Image 1 (cartoon, helix red, strand yellow):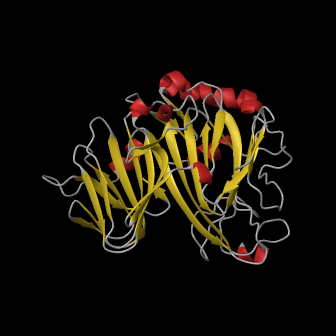
Image 2 (cartoon, one colour; image 1 turned 45 degrees about the vertical axis):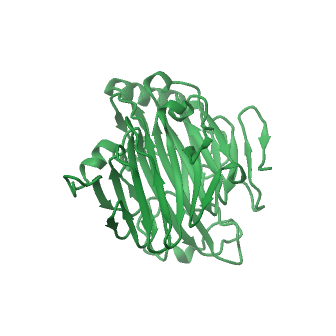
Length: 361
């Protein structure tokens, strides 16, 4: 099977969270609880233990018989590496079908929240799945896995809108070489707390005495004492979101939809990442309809050395990872195509490496 050049994969990956944070301007020092603030688009800056966060919003046209795009949509694009939005969408590393064909990971986790549309998963463990419309896939790359993430255009008679978040969460040194694993958090199992003009979806953590710690067993988030909180918050006009002060964590807010928010009295305009002081109680008020993502966690506190899709603790471990990948391909790729998709039927499922098939109940 034709293989993607490893070096091209490594150069296309995001910067470490430390490097991204260095790009952010300091603002509003003194009594302000806001530590940093910056505008956001596709890729968002993060704080430890989060390595990376991306928000994909693509309004794809109707799909063709192959669940992809007609050739007329390819003009003016850098095919195979299409990250510049054109006509309302990007193809990413896909060619006919948008998405990310087979690529490797080691040493961290990916958390993929698909709010609209569908994502097709396949990996070198023989696992597969299709999820979307609010589902979350939580994958522990651990010692190494190859996978593909493709976005089939299942609707042939209408627009195929895709909206998803992908978050990279680091693993502590003791768990970087655990077996790869993944777990589905189906949309109907994710807790949603509604009060007045505020709705909070708990992907991980707790809010208003509702707890949801369902990460894979080797995740930093599996131990509730690490306080990994991933919350999606919708607020209507005049809504008030309150969140307690904490010690020993980093807290990041990402305002990605709507206008008209204030953080403890300070106005926030447009799409922005805001790092706040967690030792101060948080109050967010909405003067219009807004949505934001909150990432909060206790830092792991270990060295982070990232080279593309590999995240380890030392340069020597990165060099060994590259040798391991070249020698083993992390189990190899047994699927018939590098941009694997799972047919035209709109059906959500997960097939695990042991052959077990799970569907949302």
